[in-house]
Length: 372
Figure 1 (cartoon, rainbow, N blue to C red):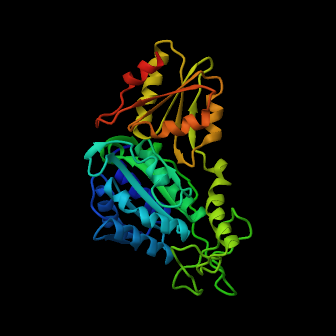
Figure 2 (figure 1 turned 120 degrees about the horizontal axis):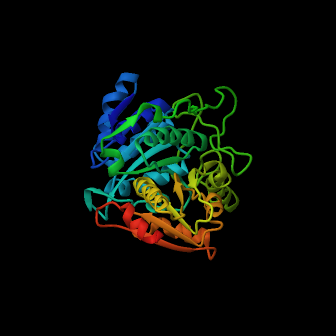
Figure 3 (figure 1 turned 90 degrees about the vertical axis):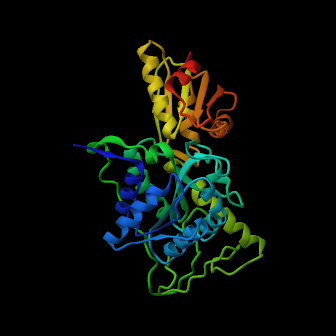
């Protein structure tokens, strides 16, 4: 069986399947369809959907709902993700499980509200103060929108961190025919494991730097201090260099120490190929079409689709690059992810980029030009 569906619907379905019961957002093209779906569907399962007064309130509501024990999600685009910046930092500092959908559109500022782009790739990692790691997944299709939304919730719960789903206008708003068998089944759902209700509880207590502290809901049986400031394991503001360093090293280590399990890529490597194509999101679909065309014409070429944008899947990229003389990175910005590939590849291969920022998609033919 098949259905006619867009990415917004798939994201909403994935959120509900993952156990999301709270959503807050503000209308902004092209993320508005996700807001509308969640407002309609959440009450049917006992959840709460809110159209907030602005983007700042939206993510603030979600942080509050998450700390009260609910799985929460928000969605925005363009100027909205910029307004989320301060509260993204709050979610990192407070170790708040949260899913943020960023439907990328052409910037800067208002830019092209109905125009596709992939210009937020660096922002979602570095768009808040401090420079601490986050997790960002990037689907290339409608079924992957469903799958990666569930996985984003699982990772948010696993690591107590805001997790981004970095998608784009074309995938979210374009209707397409999908075979129902293309949707993954049986993805385990990571539910929130509360701290024991009895006994002493220290809200940010960890033994090892990469450990994730137990969660206790605000308003529950334990006293929970939640602050945007540097704090000790009890949640009290602190200036002790040892405690400050331990907290900040922990916020990085709980992600960096687990990069291996976070890497998500698909590699289609052809023996004898000297060119490796790398892309993500909507542009990866043009890349895969280019690979099929090139091979049909007798050319050898390899491809790597990146699904886990952050942390950058460095080990997987290094393995894929081995044996290739040239790496071509295709993306709808001025080379934001190419920077990461250059950093990882070093002098092992030449790294070139294919960019577009005119509001149009990169075509398979443009990629084939670089293959030639």
